[in-house]
Length: 386
Image 1 (cartoon, one colour):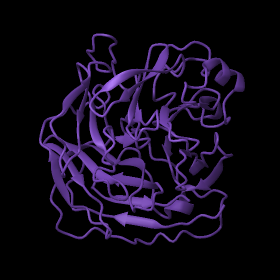
Image 2: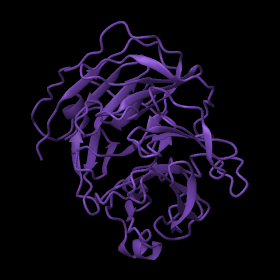
Image 3: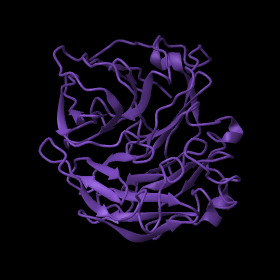
Image 4: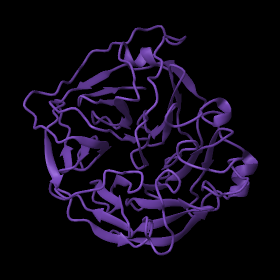
């Protein structure tokens, strides 16, 4: 496969970041940033063509200074092409709408105070009312709150569901690591829905545009206490066995993706229900890759991302291991993987999980996700993978 190696360099006048979170997918799943040692960047066998590594956009001087940032995320909050940068601070939520020249000019979209513990109280960006703008979804104590994006602001959060919170009466979701919640469109109506995994099952609550309501979509798998199906040792937590919710086959319905013990697992969304756990288990992993048996010991040490890197509206997998990117393109399931040395894509830019956050996001509006690095001095760098 030919690789287009284009570097988008976007720098901002920001103060150093206190603590940065990491996103593994645009809907996903939002997780705490990695804390392990830097990823080795040594050269490995791969394409011989040298990386261009030339910045094509640079943020102008004169941007506003941000308060210390506890988490960065990306989402399309203004219904324009490409993703925008969303920064969570003690002073509220700031957004920079990416412009054609790469400018990063932040404005405060929400002035309220949010918890900085995103594992206990996860946040996500997703279009839950179908207007083309990603909204702010907050999993709080008593349930799920939504702050709709409207006219360059997030409106005051409103309770959309009394479920999926830490103190919810029906089930208590202790934290995102052991009881993960994801947002993506499960029923092809243009509105993001919730996939929640608790105890032995994962189930969907669909968006009506003003609330989340229960649906019949569920599967007795991909959850912490699911027994002996796709993960031989159970899906104990998101660091050991990450999961995601994204459309792999371009039918506009999000599928369940799991990085288990024996490899990459997939339960397709068949409109009437997810592929049953018995059928998924009988078929085995769709790829004998990305699992703990293949040496992917944790999300912190060897991150895996879900996004669309080739613009075909199918979710792809990007992993980082042993000094290389490992790519698997979404098809009906997933294509065979391709390994590319980090230096082939990044040039002399090195990765450090202690001072950077890593994302897949469309930062240039071409409908393809780039690999994006956010450093602790506030610089964004985006690299095309395909």
